[in-house]
Image (cartoon, rainbow, N blue to C red):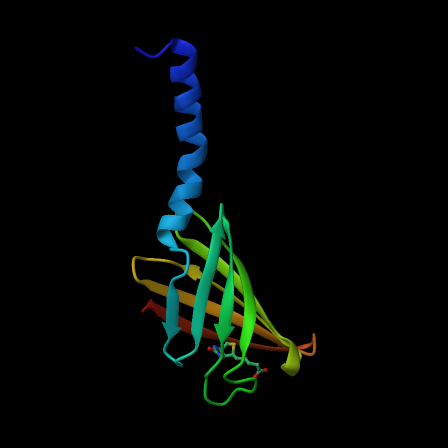
Amino acid sequence: MMKLGSQIFLALAILLLTPLAASAQVLPPFSTWQNQRTSTLNVGFVNGNQFDGWFINRAAGFQCQNIPYPATGTILPNGAITFVVNFTNCQTVTTWKGRVIGSQMPTKWVLIYKGVQRLTGSDLFRKL
Ligand code: BTN
């Protein structure tokens, strides 16, 4: 039989750790996501609400293709996701915001070129 103190400690631990585990469940560590332009996001570690990984751009009409760039982002237990890639060779930073819904991730992105020019669009990622 557990003592009351241990039971309270266990309950608190479960309450605190559940949201962290939930984030990793919606965005599995070491998962690969491909968008309709055939670019890929390779998720690495998911640590709480934060994740890292690599993004390879293969989109027609864009520069900096077929080079892995570091990606960093946040993922919430409700699936809300944001990630950023700095395409250093192209002086471009792109931010994607969207939602993980099962094996799909609809996003909207904002691309900033040379800190001034702004381009927007949508990407639908699917988990491979
Ligand atoms: C550049 O051309 O300046 C750098 C590459 C930008 C690629 C963009 S980011 C948003 C969109 N989705 C992709 O998969 N690639 C393009």
